[in-house]
Image (cartoon, rainbow, N blue to C red; front, side, top):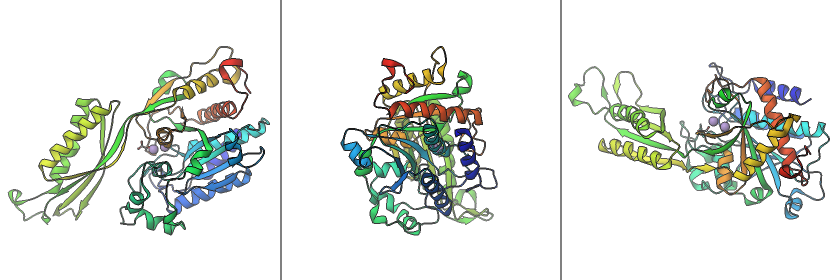
Length: 426
Ligand code: GLV
Ligand code: MN
Ligand code: MN
């Protein structure tokens, strides 16, 4: 039964990369990541799915029992449908951001099989690598390189906090860095992508609905600010003689809050590195990473310009590490899925399915930008907390999410599906 399958997969993942805070540290190309990738491969093998790994390391597990190969089906006008998400986490992240989408996708395959459904087009379950960018700084690195939105040269040169490059990390994980690059062969197979994800706000609690369809992702980016000073003794250096790199950083943090409030954006400085990092030494160097987002692109840009200008006055260097413009999900696809969900479960009256925008980035947004019709389903989060050990979704809502994904996939993989026309639950 699908609920039992979901529950047992969830239990199997619960201990992987868990730390003392109760959250997870599952970073790209680490031993924890390897365990998760092996777990994913084993779950796919158990289901007889055909696992392929693209040039970036994203894992795609195909179900296609039709004539010929997946590529034959695509060439014959049956582009595939992919569902899934990611298994990596932010530092001390929650259990749901990412894994909920992967586990729900695998449970969806089980549910379809229980129901005797055989997709008319190839269906893939995908595990995207390095969605959070927790180790190397660029979020959605797996889907960005896949789609050509991040060059392999730039990706390979990224360094983690220990100075390990992406290339070295790939090598240590048994991959050839020369392989890394866009992968059109993989992308060509994907006609539609649907990512189910835990909600990262608390709109659905107020709306009284377990599942929503996404409309868009706010523009967002990351900037690195480097402040320089001079190391000196914390006890003997007179205040007027100090060149304290921390002061510029402090101005950035307070300025980010102030300007974000004025411009209707959100801004966060959630990561900082201090050199030499001693309680009793004046900091000689401080690096702070700014994450800025908002509903309006020009406001986010203005916010960053203002903060960059202020920091520039202290001689700071500012580098943009990533920028993702507003992403609008395919409206026709979103409407179609809403219609499917409105009728799913056999309710006498169609249900009202909320549509939500989000300030969080996702691989589905990167694929949408690359021209792959993409959609997202959000599963209610009772507190809205995310990127924290407290992130949560009730089990009943997780199961409802699986049922929603099943209904969507049945529709999208059926060549007979025409939701507006016949209303049949294929
Ligand atoms: C990813 O979760 C992001 O929005 O940073
Ligand atoms: Mn996340
Ligand atoms: Mn995520």
